[in-house]
Structure formats: C-alpha cells, structure tokens
Amino acid sequence: MQDIANAPLTGLRVVVCASGVAAAYAGRLLAVMGAEATLIEPPQGAPLRREPPFLDGSDDVSALFAYLAAGARSLVCDLDAEDGRAAATALLSDADIFIDDTPLADRPRRGLDEAAITARHPDLIHVSVLPFGATGPKASWKAEEINILHASGEGNLLPNGLSIELFPERPPVKIYGHFASLQGGVAAALGALSALWVRDEVGGQYIDVSSQDAALAVGAFAVQRYGDGQVEHRVERSFRYGGVLPCADGYVELLTLEQRQWEALVELLGRPDWALDPALADNLERSRQGPAINARIREWAKVRRVADIVAEGQAAGVPLAKYNTPLEVLRDPHERARGLFAPVEIEGLGALDMLVAPFQFGGAPLALRAGPPALGDYGRAGRQALPAEA
Image (cartoon, helix red, strand yellow):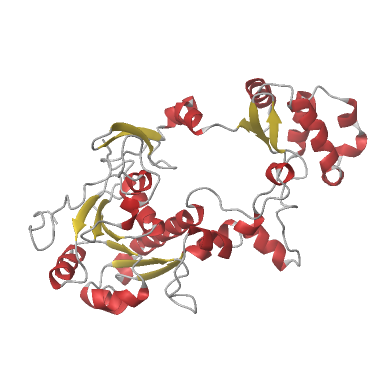
C-alpha cells in the first residue's frame, strides 16, 4: 500500500475525459502519485477500450487501456444529454484537476469549454490536451500518433544509427506505440502540477497543452542545430563512434563522452595498436575518424557475448549496457529491485505484470491501486447516484 511519503498527491481528485493517449496518460501519472482518478466515459465506453492489441486470452481487453486506466474509476456520462452533463458538473465540483481532450467544436454543447468550466469551477485546474493545442491555426485539426510524430520532426529523423546502416532504403518510420502522445501526457501532468503549486495564491487555471509541442521538445538538439544553420538528417544522426553494437548473441549500446571513458574503452578492447595512435588522444580527431573507429569496435564486438562485454565494460568504467527484450526487462534484477513492475489484477485474466511508474518518491516504489475499471463501476449517471465520498 502507498503512504503519503511516496504518494504525494494523496487526497487529490482528478477527473479525466480522454479519447486519446495523451490525456489518459496525464491522468495515469497523477493517479500513480496517489491522486484519485475518475474517467468520464460515454455509454459505449472510451475509444481506448477498443484499441488493439488485446491482452492474451481476451478478445476485448485492450492492453493500452489496461495500462492507461489502471487504478482509476469509471463514470458513464452521456455528455450529449442533460443528465450526463449534470453528473459531470457534480463530479467536477469536488475535483482538483480536470484533464480533457474533447475536440474544440464539441466543448460548448457539452459544457466543457474554457469559459463554462471557469465560471462554474473557479478553483479547478482545467488541462486541455489536444494534438496541436487549443489555440492557433491547427487547433481544430485531428491527428493520430503518426501525424504528431512527424509534425514534431522526430519521425523524419528515424531510423538512424545502426538501423539506417542496416536498412538504408527504409523510409521515415514511426516509433512503435504512442511516443509523441505520451510526451503530451507528460507535459499535461507537469502543467497540472505547476498550476496546483500556486493554486492557493491564484486560484484555478486553464492550461493549453499541444502534443506536437511536447514531442518537439524531445528533439531539442535538432532544433538547436537548425538555429545554428544545420538541418539534421537521419543518415547523419548518430554518434561518431559507439552507439548500438551487434554482438554474437544480441546487442549493446556504447556511449563514450569523456576522455576517461575513451581510455577505459581502449583498455576493454585490449589496447590494440590502432587505438593507441597518439592522434586519437584528441576528442575532435576521434570524431573525425568515427566511422573507422566504429568499424574496429564492431569487429571486436561481433564475436563476443553480450554478458561478457557488459560485465567487463562496466567493471572498467565504460558506459555500455545490454539491449533487453521485453521479457528480459520484466525479469531483470535491476527493474525488480526498483519495483518498476508490479502484478495487477485484470478482470477475467488474473494478475499480470505492469509498469507502475518511471520514477519514485521517498526512495520507495510507487504502487497501483488496481487494474483498469469496468465500464461504469463508479455509477451510471441518471441511473445510480454517485457515492457519498464524491
């Protein structure tokens, strides 16, 4: 069980109206920090409930929804009907944060526009999360993950490094999953917490989050280089030497940024003559000779086992690590020791390991209250009164 030491948002009430990943993930981040999260869903359930892939053994339990909604409750509200809007208003009256990704055109008739929310709930922190934000020429645009990823510039920089070397003809691709939308969710959660920090002084605030802007921030170096007059391209987006190295039984990633790390790498390689060239003592010269250095390192790595390279390299102070498969991540002692994963009960499927959170508070792992909610487990608006504690 969580306690206030590592669940700093205990007692906070968050309402989430989400059809997409960004808003749902923002609510998930706040919930795992101790907040009580309630999902407002239409009678047919949120679209995320029907998003594949589905968990093994089930034809209708979305793995994505199970993760994003873990620990939350579900209130069915038909926001196109008067009783549904009334139920949502009642819920928001006792909430601290409201996270919403309803399209702008639909907000006024559902009572979710900025002006209506501010008038009814002046102390509420209202977070709008849309692909391109709620203001500007693209505010009304729809977008899927692939659109946001490429609109942020990150998609054009993929694949790169070893991938572009192995597959030079491959076109720009989308990272698997919902990378850009998750960045939007992080920005929304941080925006909500920032507003919460000063709420006693300024009252409620309206926060406008663009997932495109959030994903753009990930490529800050590319933006910086553009400002310097350079246009970064996926073919050139790689470390001069190091990066992902193929080994006899898998892959490792190597990154040497400091002189001492280069010297440790030379020792790990067995002090070969080419690495002892006095010219390579200079970092700029190493960058210039990067492709040739990488060819030597890869030749050395391809006949060695990952476990041996990692053990010897880390003992020598070389910053490298193994690329794990998803199953290996779940079984890794490091992840287990940090409590990154925990068994979560999924109705009809039993307990499954789920990522809890990528951070900790108070030096202890966070916890999930429960798995994803059944549709309407908080009561169905117009049919059943909300619990007294709401």
